[in-house]
Amino acid sequence: SIIVIFVGGIFSFFSSQNPDGLEWSIEKTAGISELEPNGKIHNDLKKIQQNISVLPDYDFESGEGNGTGIAGIVGSIGTFLLVFLTGGIISIVKKRKKQ
Image (cartoon, rainbow, N blue to C red; front, side, top):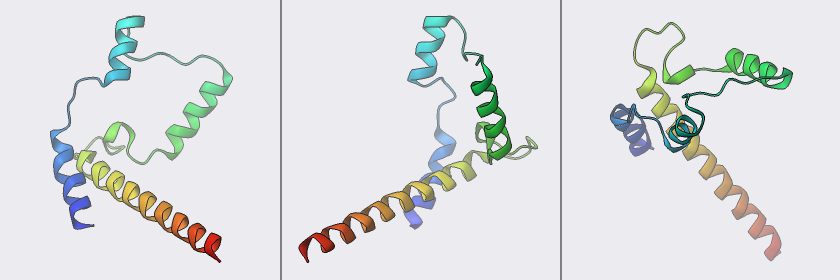
């Protein structure tokens, strides 16, 4: 787990500011970097996301400080826990099938 924190906290500072593949293709196809949602469901989901987002755009809500490292650590730990729990569930299911 120390490696997870190291990778998430340190290597996240080396992440690219360039758009990823999806953002790049949207910009090349539509001519804009982000598509504007239209419709009630999109607006409702956008409001929910704004209310529950912990690190919007990988930064703190105040805009002070660098949330990239924290986002990297939180994401790495979350991924580690998800893999660990999935492995545990698979192990339990296999043991029950043998019995």
